[in-house]
Length: 159
Image 1 (cartoon, helix red, strand yellow):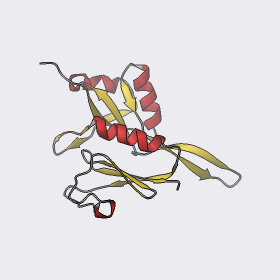
Image 2 (cartoon, one colour; image 1 turned 120 degrees about the vertical axis):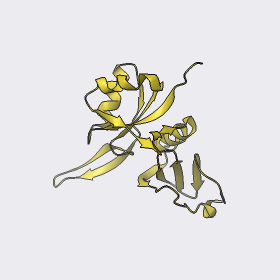
Image 3 (spheres, helix red, strand yellow; image 1 turned 45 degrees about the vertical axis):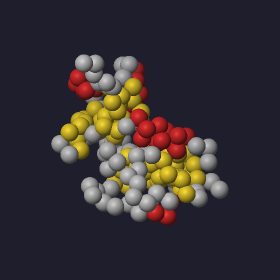
C-alpha cells in the first residue's frame, strides 16, 4: 500500500517559524509558514513586518514515515498531536488559508485557539450546522477554520 503525503503541524522554537520553513524547503521538504503583514511601531519609525499566523508552528507536507527527517533542522521541536494522533491539516484547509492570506484585499488577520467541542456560531454567515474546514466570507470577514488542529484564522478584508 502506497503511503500518502499529508500536511502535519510541526512546532518550532519561538520566533523561528519562517527560518524553519526556509531550512526545510532548502532540504526538499515542502513547508508552509502562513504569514500576515503587520505594522510595527518603534519610537523612531514604523515598519511593515511579516508575522506568522500560527505562532511557533509550520505546516509540512510529508509522508509520516519521513517524520524524523524534519528534526535534522535545529529549529524543529516536535509534531502537534490532537486526540493522541499526529494532527493532519487537510489540503482544502491549507489552500483556503493560502487563498485568504494572499488576497490583495486583506487588512488584518487574527488567530484564535478553539477548544475541543467548542461551538462557533456560523449562523450569521448562513452556515447553520456546518463544521467548517473551508473558508467563509461575510461582508468583510473571512474565516478559515483549521478544525483538525483547533484554530480559527479570521481575516478582515477591504470593502
